[in-house]
Every structure is written in C-alpha cells, then in structure tokens.
Image 1 (cartoon, rainbow, N blue to C red):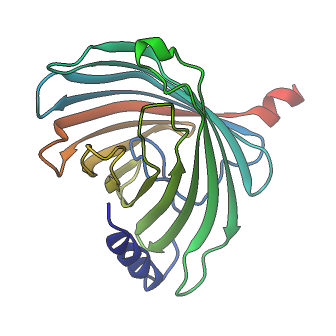
Image 2: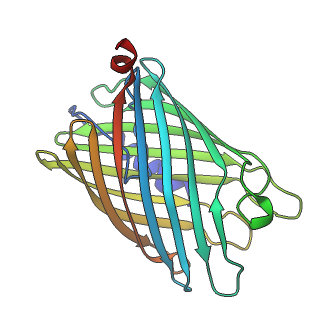
Length: 260
C-alpha cells in the first residue's frame, strides 16, 4: 500500500470533531487508542475462513488473543492462531503459527480538532514449526501508530505501521508498510455496524501489494460479552474472493476476582 493514501486517512481524521465513546476490537483488525481498563482481562476468540481467487482455502481457528490492562494507559497482550491453508500448486500446511506479544500505550487524549493517539509494538516470536511452513524461524517487530477521532455517533480509527521482518536465509522477504482505517456506528442499543479498509506493501519482490475490506456487526449480548460477525474480500485480483469471520470478546474483572 502506498504511503499517500494512508496520510490522507490521517489528515481526514484531524478535521473530525465531537466526542463519543469508541470501542475497537473484533471483528476489526484495525486497533483503537483505548487500552483495556486496569485490572481487566479481555479474551478474544474467533474463526476466519477465506477463499483465495486462485482456489483453495485459508482457515484460521482459533484466533485467540488475551489482553490485560496493566496500568491506566498501558495494556499487554499475547495472541496466537491455528491455520489450515492450501492452494493450487503449493504444499498445504496447518498448525499453530508464531506467538505474538504486544504492548500498547495511550499517548494523548482526544481534543477538539485532534485525535487521540497511541503507540503499540508487536513482536512475533518464532515459536511455530518452520519445517511445516508455519514460521520463518525469525522474529518480526511491528511499530504501530494509532489514531481515534469521534464524530457522534460515529468513531473513526486509523493505523499506520511498519514491520521489520526477520529475514531467513534465501527467503528474500521485505519489510512491510501497513495501515488502514475503520468506522464504528452504534445504530441501536447493543448493536454496532463496523467496517474497515486495510492494506500492506508486498511481502516479497514477486508478491503483490495487499488491500482488503470487510463489513460487519457487533452485538453486546451481556455487559461483558460481545459477539461479532463480518464478511469482506480483497480489492485486488490476487487476494481472497470472499472472506468471513465470527467470534466473541469476553471481559473479566480480575480485580473483583482477586478481592474474593
């Protein structure tokens, strides 16, 4: 993805005004600035299924993330997913992929004419089986800038990130520029409409750039349980012809449990 469209997204965010409570998370892949509240544990579980344009399948289940609010502005999380992929003329592979460790810190609160800002760092540890095609055997590091701005009743989030790839011998992988934006609209009590547009530069010289979108809904079944569903596709002919995901987000107040 080119840097100019991403810069345009951030410029658009800067002119939005008014304040509304924002909540990013599943099914969005774009993050928001708000960390998980101090002492709370947020668990995300999900399933993803994609059909590449060239045939085959791309399944990821479970998509698992556990995030804990360490301080007022700081959260730490771990994430892992199991994949099952096959495509024509390539060897299929399945199993758990590398473990991700992430830290996010809220830098600035939202103000009139300026978005709230946060920074995050994600480290991918080479914990998966390299011989099965599940890992490069090297660690990757991603730096992410996050912006959230509100226009009641809408919330807009934008991400701009850069991944430093641990390049294995002979792999010829490239560092990645990635980004995108997401929109949330709580149109009736308990229900929110969500949508996002994401992109990334090519992972290797022979690979295409990536661009995807998805639209979906989030339903607050309980105060601490949110269900979600979304579908989308790639904006490029080399991506997925259709993709879908569903899952849940469960929040546990660890402070209350530890006081018992």
